[in-house]
Image 1: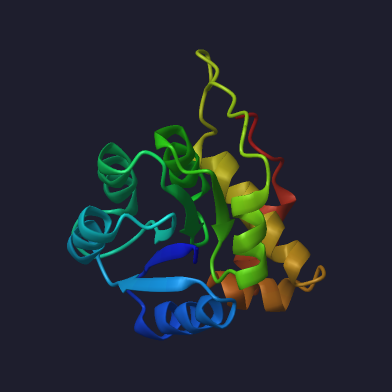
Image 2: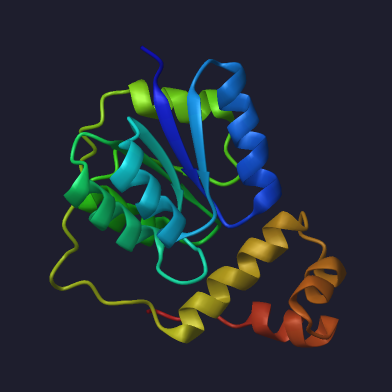
Amino acid sequence: MTTTILIVDDENFFRERLGRAFDKRNYKVYLAADYNEAMQIVEKDRPDLGVVDLRMPGKSGLELIKDALAIHPDMRIVVLTGYGSIATATDAVKLGAVSFLPKPADVDDIITAFTMTTDLEIPEPEKDFQAPSLARMEWEHINRVLHDCKGNISAAAKKLGLHRRTLQRKLNKYPPDN
């Protein structure tokens, strides 16, 4: 019996490329560009696996995971996430996705994510967690960009959209406590 997979992504090129790669590996592939198309496929064809992008126009990937698993609880879903949405990907795992991967993902990595043990331990957030201040976030961001520029002040200032002297003044200050 052929394994079926649903690939849901609003980027046509990426979705079709991924679909072809799974097809070459003898999967029966269903493609959907958004929540509505994906739900029609889930209701009608009940695919074994799903690869879901979190950010799509209309309803999000989180809503798709929740609703698809309500209809077809045996479906195994891997979430693809873009830069900066790891917290949302963690929410997806809490909703029932087996794993998440950064986008763009390699087909072999996706297959591995489906076959690995999926008991991901997601720590509960601390009750007393205090978010860092904006000043602290700015300080960390500046230092990360400076590190990426290998300590070159002029290059970092250009990336940050600051004048070189302004960046030097900011770097001469002590980092904020919180």
